[in-house]
Amino acid sequence: MPKVLGVDGCPHGWCAVQLDARKLTLTPVHYDTFEAILDAHPNTVIAIDVPIGLMDGPGGRECDRAARAYLRWPRRTSVFIAARAQDPQVVRARRRLQGGVPG
Image 1 (cartoon, rainbow, N blue to C red):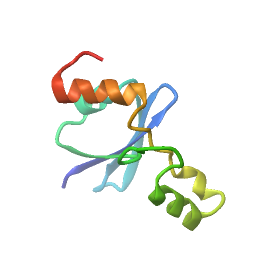
Image 2: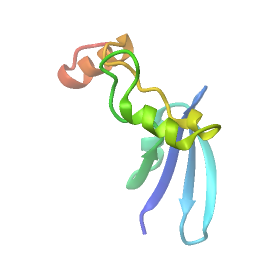
Image 3: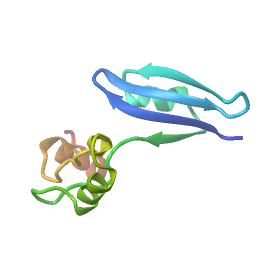
């Protein structure tokens, strides 16, 4: 049975919860970096709670607006705002990933 780990960003790193499907238990753990999660959990299915995709311009993504409308208050606040493709942090990460250029 595969190991399963759910992770979410938090103010000082990453909060992770590991599922033990045999015992039906959940174990919470904090990690300082995402790399530390990968090192500690090889051969594990990792579900990351982050937006998928980037905004191309102002106003947000249609899928996010539709999800917020569907969920309504108070759950609509759990739909994250995706980063914009032009954000400096996104540009630096893309450069590192695509061409090995330092960020």
